[in-house]
Length: 169
Length: 304
Image 1 (cartoon, one colour):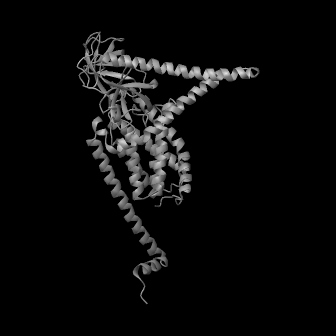
Image 2 (tube, chains in turn green, yellow):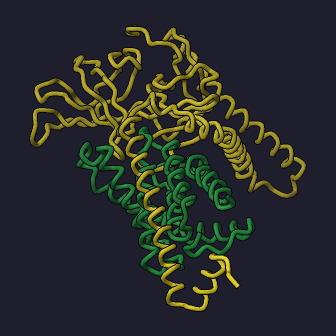
Image 3 (spheres, chains in turn cyan, brown):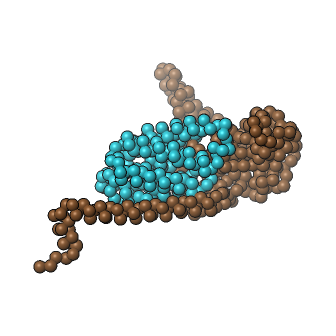
């Protein structure tokens, strides 16, 4: 259960940064997807049923504070988590750089899928290049922040007395 | 002597690495299967949520209300802290070059500057609220003023969080305005907070009229491109600079509220409609206070 506490606290902080801090700092377009970073961390380092449920809940939390369709981020974040889990079973991923790459790809997948499923791409074809640029920038920004988030999670886990996560339960 | 079966297994696998690995492999495989099964179930649940809870009213589900309510005090406190910090920073900047010989005067000036900044903020708030009050009077419907306390969790959607909720009479689907014009509509409401879908979001569609030529169209948000007016035929009379107002047909916004100005009109390269770009009347980046109409909209507000 301590992992649930850790990720609940982390999700709350991530949400506060994404919805409040950045909003008041005047950043409304280029928002790093810190909740997805948490889901990727779960997929790469915490393999268990509870981690799967936590990833699902991270998606739901994103939906509760973004957009008008509930279920969209829930679906995509769960898929990103499962993809990270499967990948981490076949590749040794105990490295933050690999985590950053996974986050980069995860954000690109999630954003493009969101744009496709909400019909945004088809509704504004003229702005396609600027949209894709925005997605790329968001993915890069989020990937850059990934090592920091992973390190904070490691320290949080140490404070809570969690065993060092490396793909086990 | 007969060992218990679990102890026997432990000793056997510990002393026989290959079989032990196989045993662990089976356990790992079973765990993986369980996890993938749960993952699949959760993906199906997500698809179910996505397909059934498509639009606004269904968004006000209990977990979402709970999350919004948990976040509200923190968002309010943060908004207050940021505004105060901004005031203090402005005061500080205004005083950076004051001579040290005038410390006593400086201290007094600092206090006065701080008070003046606060006064200016209060004046600005007062002016905005007065304008909102005038809007409310002009509309002649019940409305509640609210502060914007947060933004959207991702950069792809355009929503804001306000500090009023169900306890102030708010419900999903209510019109949200400011002194400049239409802001959007509420999509999720908890007891003391609500989320507003801005007009510039790609999921927001509003029926509007060109005030000059009385042409109808559907106004939609285009991410990164302001607003677009859709379904206006090539033969219709729409010109840059035309004012667009709400038609009242969508049952959310009363008729006659300013939405934006036509900025560019081009015939589509293929198709029967015009490609019309619209500049919103509201500056969504500077939203601080808004007015939420808590009463059913009247059929018409045309007083021009």
